[in-house]
Image (cartoon, rainbow, N blue to C red; front, side):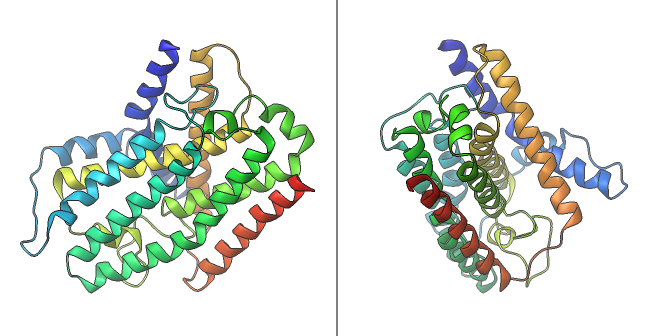
Length: 303
């Protein structure tokens, strides 16, 4: 158990920025460029930590709390979810509800810190972020309900346990629908194409990026690290569904999980290289369709 705990913590603390590096490098290869080093996100975080804060005099404590909560919440969520066959350090009945609303808490503070600047530009991004969140949260909740039905448990360790191997045989169609729905949730929550472009600076298309324009130095480093943690945590759901096997060796299980996460990062990079960003009016339609997919998966399980 101690080895599993140490592996879990090491993955949480050291692995997330590498995922962003893999995505960027994949996109560079598709574009025919050499691209930045895989470890560039680590260099960026180190550089930002060496800088100072630049804070507007019109802001309050809410602006300062946004990056802190944006980093703390994914860290707490990472302690609730198993990484492949490595169980979560903290587990209790009903932790899946806490898991969902931890992200709602982070989103609330991020949007509030954007509004606290008094900028209508950042307010526009906050409004879009919250709107998309309202549409994507039902998908995640219905997906977790399906897993509750299949596992008979009410904690994430039970939902993502060994039973998934047999569940693929008895309810493979439902799990396949969940994988599709959760992958869409992953893209939306992490502001990836086709829903948002983390590299854009066009005023009419920015969503998440516009909310953090006024943050700098260590505050911006916390935002970037928190974003990579969020990618890791939500990706852990997909990896466990797609790779539900338990080798019995914590080291091998950790390697399987990290390989799965790297595969997801490469997939995101490929998608961002071959797809364009959707029109804003199309995004709600797609998210509602994703919710319907998760509901249909629940119907298949209950029938």
